[in-house]
Length: 130
Image 1 (cartoon, rainbow, N blue to C red):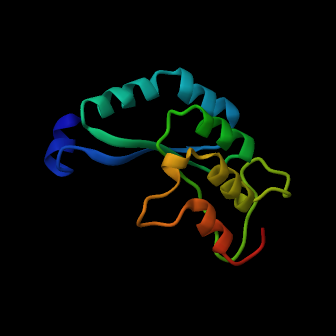
Image 2 (image 1 turned 180 degrees about the horizontal axis):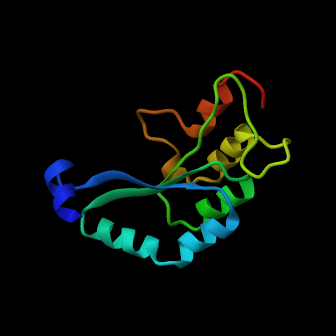
């Protein structure tokens, strides 16, 4: 409800995420069911600043989402101790592979700001298995 956003959050949500999808069919539904159009209308009205997603999907699904150009950011998890298998994986592809591919696929304008390192350099500096 817009009134709650105005009263509680100072008028807008800074980061809105479509959270928890892991399969291509789920991504396709998000892209086709009108959700993003509604969220984009809220952004146009100043109620949302950035639209993104978080997922444990396989790399090809994550890259498809990035390449739509509809998302401002991606929240991918990296475990400091090591990688784990992305949802639906065979065990050969963990989230480290997803993070590297997503960082490489992000438009340059979304990769970093002058005050923060890029996702690619952050990933390259992390210890642990790849």
